[in-house]
Image (cartoon, rainbow, N blue to C red; front, side):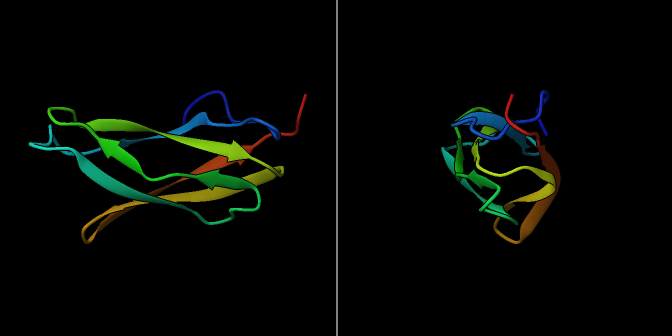
Length: 88
């Protein structure tokens, strides 16, 4: 997860980073899903040619002590937990 944690009402803010084993030879789409889209919506990301990572952006709708965010590329999948804090 990215620090600081998103807060309820945050729109299109960084919530995680997808990091691959090395630079990709062409733009590469990584599928990203939220285990609780009612709390945190996320979008797929594209790792650009020559890069090895991309930031995952999300929209926080409901407070949660832990939303699993999973990223997959082919048969490889990794996940992390994102905390959604209450609105200020």
